[in-house]
Image (tube, rainbow, N blue to C red; front, side):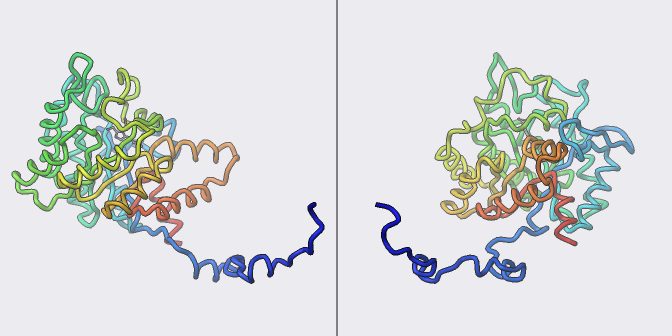
Length: 338
Ligand code: PBG
């Protein structure tokens, strides 16, 4: 019996409520905009390596390079000029420095610590975030000590806590462990405090998922070919959100100052739940695979890379994130500073 009754006007249907009114012009859209991405939201992860005055391209991450110490300092200077609050360093360690237990992580003179000290000296105004996880230093590519096919939790925590102290000694402002061992946040807090580093903060990779999106990163730091098996016995199952929340609660109890969710876009629900249920500072790490997907589609002319980049970053603000680790950071800062 459709089409027989009197046709209602749109005003009768909507009761005069027309949401398009505030979309009609740029000035109107700006007035009703609910979230805003700012340069203050950005953390820039950079890749570092031994050597001098060299930058190496990373195949799966067009536009991102591995930098020697001098170039890393220049990158930090550039980031600081752009207004980016902090950078996070990740190291490509030569094969001959790697072993079963990642012992080079404890070397006060390793490339991470030398770069930290050099940046601290040259660019004191930028925050430096370092990762004491063992994967750059192990010859099997796992984040911890591998023994009889098992990543040994407690022994790993002990090494990571000591590596964190070396990083703080070098000048790191925030220790951000990416390994997901049980108890590492509390152990790092204790070790930092015992070494007089009460002011060094901890950003926990609180909900790091066993994701397929880390491949380009492993190419960047040279662990991809080494990794035996997978990381499912220590990273969170992508199917789980309650478990991620329990990790977050635990990390706060153990002393984490900031919580990070990784990868970012597929786990916005986790960001949102941490923000609304635990009301703690929460950060999303837009990982290498997420970067690569945008770059690959843009390079093919299938998407407008810049617009997609900005749209995805806006999603993190909607989901309640206080900041975003993104390889796009300098590009985004330049757009926001225009
Ligand atoms: C490992 C680590 C990973 C990333 C940073 N540290 C993941 C992994 O290799 O398993 C991923 C970062 C990215 O993909 O951008 N501790």
